[in-house]
Length: 361
Image (tube, rainbow, N blue to C red):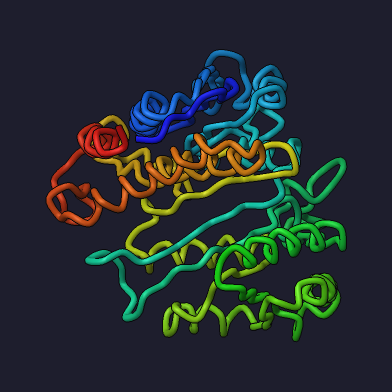
C-alpha cells in the first residue's frame, strides 16, 4: 500500500437533506471514513441542518449561516432535498440546490453515466459525462436579479423567461472540452436552435468558438429530441455531452436510468474554487427510514468531490482515495449478492455501505 504524507486538512460541510438523505449520508460517511483511514486524508467534517430540519427549527430551509459556512469549507456533501414539498419561497421554502449553485457559482453540474456488467438497459457499453450549465436557462428561480422568471400577467396566462448568456455558455463549454481532453476527445453540443434561434444560437456560438481552441477534440452538434433517441439507440458513441440547464437535466436522468438506475448516478456541482457533491436523485420520502435506499449515487458523488479536490491541490492521496472508492463500488455492484434491492440484490443501505467501506479499507 502506498504511503501518503503531508496532506492538508480537508474541511467538508455535511448537509443531510430530506427523506432518505440522512441514511445515504451516513452510508457515504462510512465509506469516507474508510478512505480517510487508508489514505490519511485528514477529513474534518462539519454538520448543519438544511431542508425541513432547518425549516422546523428556524423557519427557512436554508439558513444564512449555512450558506456562509459553505463558502468557508473545502467541499460540501449535499443530501437530497424535498423542494417540491417545501412552502413558498416567501415563507421560507428556499430551493437549496438552486441557491447553492447560484450563490456559490457552482455552475458546472458534472454527471457521469456508464454501464456495468449485469446492470443497465443498453445493448452496448456506455461511458459518457453530461456537462450541465446550472445557473441559468429555463429555471425561473435563477434567472432574475430580483423577482421570478416565471409569472402570470392574467389568471389564465402563465409565462416563463429563459436566460442564456455568453459568459455562462463559454465557461461550461471550456469545462466540457477540458474534460474531453482527459477522456476520448469528443464533445457533443445539444440544442434546439431550429426553434430557439437566439438563445440556443448563442449557446452554439460559444461552443463553436471553444471548439476552435481545442482542435484535438472532435466536436459535433445534435438537436435535443434526436439526442434523446440516439442516447437510447447508440449510447456508446457519446463521450462528453454539453448542454444548457434544462436539456442536460433531462438527458442525465435518461442516461442514468439506461446505466441501471438513478441510484447509480454520481454528480458534482463545481465552480472555479468550490465544489459540492450531490446525489442526482431525489429524496424518496416514501422509503425514508426503512434502510432500503441505494446510497451509490452519493458515495460516487463524494468520490468525485475527492477527485476534484485532488486535481485542484495536486494531492495524490485524494485522487487515490477517489479511485479506491469508485473501484470498490464497481466491485460490489459486480456481484448480484451484494447489490441493493432496487438492483435485484438483498442488501440494505447500511449493509451495502459497509461492504463498500470494507473494500476501500
